[in-house]
Picture (spheres, rainbow, N blue to C red):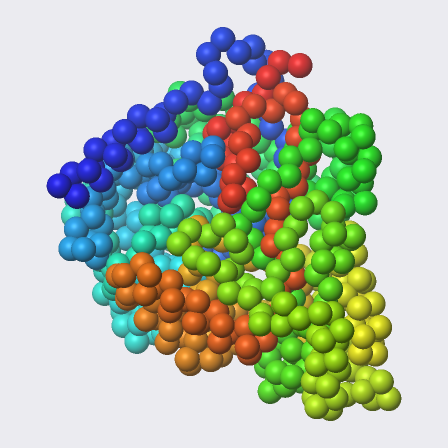
Length: 535
């Protein structure tokens, strides 16, 4: 009976997913072009090579996974029209849409997913997101190079049936399949062009749009994909993504009529926005954490948890969120934000202390770590280009100087250089970071600090923490699983590999003629849901 309920539910979702983007009778603009600021220049559009929100925004238009999302973030069928779950959650059988096509007209098959998932797990691919598929049987052994990729627990029964065997019950598995790293890739194209396949004129995708043009530091243009299985219900003809790192520049272009939506806006401009265009401001809860990472592989933070704790305790998060940001962000005294399903957040025990108590303990820890006002710590905060990131770094540097006498130097870097330096861990000391949930589950945050995760840029390595994460992945009981993840978070917070600062809200300004944009906790907005009203 349980399996049959899943089957019927998915078919019902499939009908809802095909609803027209624009309501019937609405007068649409003749020119269906959506112009979107997108933060930093993506380093790649290969779903297995890229990282970061800007790349994922574009990949959601170019590709489609087994599972997709409705405008409000609800899970809906993607390439998979339906599925069954058997063996107490260990076996998923997906039935692919026979009408699904690649942008060159080739059918999308179960073999495409087998190829793609083996590729991302292959150590030779060098994907930073290979750990995403860790719930699949044998995935972690393949990542470590201990098992051939052909042993992955995924197989194509026929062209339109894919079976996935998991190592343990994974409640968030369907949500995980919306992430760009799980998208299929077109094997013939990848093998023909190698590292250069994800370029205009070459990239073959299976999403609602195709890559038309990419001018670095100017724009990325997408065109409607006539081969997409639901093209009849796509309204936009073109989407233009602009890599504008500076929020002030993006807002100026928005006010000049060059953009329909911004990726964010400068916090200094909020009073003006509220006075002049209040109806165009969109601020909503967002499942993400803004934090600083400590490089644990080099001095001064290697083997020095007291120093890391002292710096963490002297950041006044209420000042940052209430006086510097002022757009509803929540002070973060833990890693996993509120709003995550089936989880109660874990927080630092000293959150309840007075500011004076925190300061006294932080100064003692600072001295025990080998520093004083006569022998101050000199440290770099490294961040990617953004007015907001700079304001936060300046404020935190001032807090550390006042409380402890720390001397701070700010280092601003372009996005690609910044990411590479974080990964190499040769020059970073403290780096800005943000983690946005890949799916609505605490494990999406916990796994980032697993010692083998490709984006664990702090270099955190605690075997007890790893073991708790692995135990949680095998635990079928939701309550026991939650406790394992909470125990892991407590251990991690006590080690101070990161400095949580605040929990995000999404911040956009959006033109009144943009239809189909629905605020959601993941801040995912597929262009196939968007339409432009006549104006």
